[in-house]
Length: 427
Image (cartoon, rainbow, N blue to C red; front, side):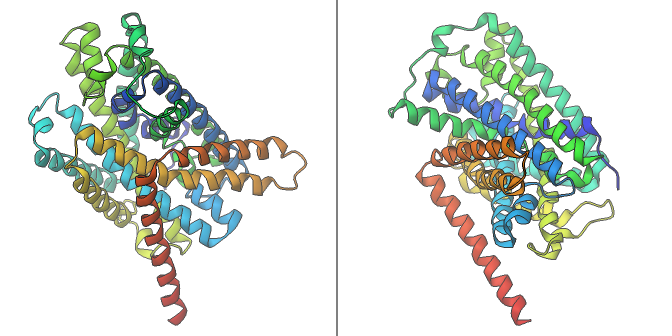
């Protein structure tokens, strides 16, 4: 089986994180004004905490394909392991739906009909998911090549906006009040919840540990390096974009980075940045489709998911898991696309974040369990406690509607798990 090196592993982490989140989030955060940037900072700290947790877990459990799921199952047993596997799997296909929505938003710069016709936009989103499902079916070599190329093509334009756009920033836009009507704490909590979506993928190397060379070293290195690069790119780019337009204008933008580039360097820069955004979202979609096959495959290998998820095609790819997840992603996309693009994206990314936060929280607690009673584990246990507290805070910030939908999806998973166990016991 072909193995990925440190560079490809870091590209997988960075490529999965730098995608739809950074390119549409400035519009979603505009309502919070200056507190939106504080939310970015809080989410960045949380992402680095999570990267440190997964680095430590990879050292303690180097052979653990499935990442968060495998760690939690080994620490707490099958039922918590299944809850994490189910919740994270839901998060993956919700993430892919959100990424497809963001990509369609930037394609609207080149094809204006996509911005005005919901049916056409939804069809385009479904088409993108189908296309990259086919690419993932071809094999690991093809996935890695696409991931490395798209990561380079999207990081460089983002850095250009972040660095070269800073002289054009209007500080009054950054320091605007925003239109959020709640408390400052509520605004920061909500902004942190939204921005954490942009860091989903910090665990990508851990999930794909079976595909990485020297996983005991490279999983942790790829997680930390990929997250650090992402934090730098995000903060620079967000300051530049949020300082380029008044919050009330930014809030209605479906392509904020492209519009910021146009404000900085003229209208000719707008399609160039939109093209970079398209590459970014396509790279993220490619990487997350890879993960949506690897993750349920690991759970199926352990007997917690149906065996069909573990079946490989001739290229060694668990295509059934990828295909079924893609069908569900398309269903979620079509279900919410009657709303505005930004509202659709915001809902799906918040639901995706909630579905990933429970695995993150339990992974932090798993680190504490693995280090319990070890004389040199004090720092690791403290890291696990702080990270778990951060995850609990962000879960609180997801809001009632998203918590309701997340609870329903988790309940469905637990019912299916119980029914499957009942059928097994009777067989």
